[in-house]
Image (cartoon, rainbow, N blue to C red; front, side, top):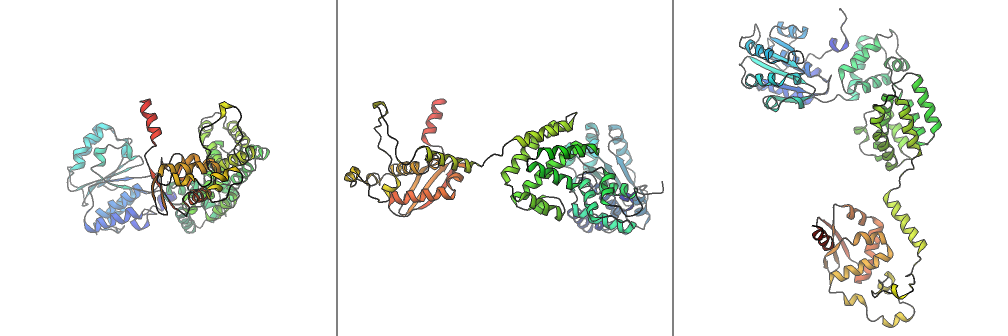
Length: 524
């Protein structure tokens, strides 16, 4: 055929033309300049990112009449033959169809002969992970010590399937997915060269559908160019590619966040009538709520969300009135239902059931809010003061815990004032354990949830004006104690117990209290 697709017509012919793989092209350029090119090189990475292209450019750089050179001339016989794909000294082999041990033995026999007219005989094996185990083993010795005129270049999308004995004999280069902006700008440049008009919004849509693959993006652009000879509208691009408009995702997510089940079912019915893939819709919806969660957390949004700046602003606006906890709950429920929808024979019904269940689920409250509500409920049910006990069986021989007001110097009213001179703080001043127990007792009257966390701790060191509290565990207890309102209560109680302001320091350790140790010993 006379027509060349865009991916072949505009294939990069020099290292400088390769898109977004500078970490590889720069290393290869320096290796060629310094004469340190390895005899076996492995190119790995996602599809359509330039692995075979870079292998061809490197072959031209090594066999160029002016080479080895980092910039092949692309006019000599060797460069032209490699560009056309019929170079007599550069063999491009498909690993999937040449994977037997007999074919590797044939390769070993052929590498003994010198190249026809080039400095090197180069073997480019694509999808090398498809070789059989016996073929890999037959290649080991040749790959480790090939003749001086032979080079091997391997390309694969699944390097984990290659034996470690092969990997250890190769110099490995990992390709990265190409960014959305780079794909869009490159396609815009090609459209200008081809005289084809298309909106930037449509180019961004094509780039997203390509999934980081430049070859996929150019194939989709080729398909769109074949559809019309004039200006291509965004609606036409959506129809040709069968892609769901991003506006529909925003409308659907808005209806979900507003718990409008009628609007949700109506939108799903419209999408289904247009013939869109429900499973693809669900994948896009799942990604949309993931992006909303990232936008709600508000950290490195541009880096973590691969969307145009205009859509990122819409995400931020949509996520602004929502908490990260609410979005995380929705995202978690959608993600857990992903397998059931993907494997369902009736994905529309499965999606409707999932969304109805999601809208009927009440949003969860943060743990801090629950604790505050429990404390408020305790104060309403049991007002300040010790409830009166009746009956001999309920009498306690333990003294009542002192209150914060008694420690802060306020005079109690009634007969208790007669015994005020004998202060319990003076009796336990020399014993850190008793002082810590006294602090916990007072806190239990002011803030029971804080007292439950302090019960796990111990007073590690007590000096003049300074207290060091040892907090066991993995950091959860420390985070609960360090809350601003809890630290304020703890500071107030310690000041009242010791009589002056204390500098409180919290330290985390892996030790567990003696009570838990004793329980472990009994169990064992």
